[in-house]
Length: 159
Ligand code: HEC
Image (cartoon, protein in one colour):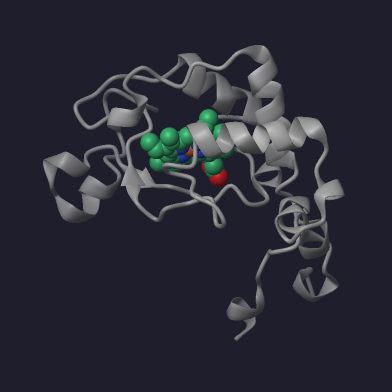
């Protein structure tokens, strides 16, 4: 019951989606549009995951074979569960092995660091080229997914 009680649904993004248009500023709204067009095929709102396993190009050779370790299927090599982006600004380091230290590193990865392999997601074959301005907007939006009420709720603090 305690686990089921732990729900983060009051970020500024949530308030915006519930009709409070002032909850996000222009840069964050543009960031939301970019996430919807470039990231939502995997990080699908409202939970910012489609619950699938994908290879997002972290490695070409896999020390941790990911989903393949469970299924033994060659087509699952290097695939990891698509994580939610809710409260992601607080959950560094990033990726299954904490490879990326910051959200800027993550955006650089998608923009210019995708590593090829047989199971790389088809949507990432050419990476997701992002200009510095687009990166700044996406970063602003990702920060708006932090739910201050949730992370500061004393009910979920250390006893
Ligand atoms: C093809 C599917 C796919 C697309 C498109 C995609 N991602 Fe991801 N993303 C993943 C997967 C899979 C992981 C987890 C990889 C791992 O654990 O090693 C991930 C991890 C992340 C993480 C790290 C989260 C954490 O808690 O460690 C962030 C942040 C992220 N993605 C942001 C984005 C952004 C922003 C975009 C668009 C510019 C994007 N992703 C596009 C599949 C995708």
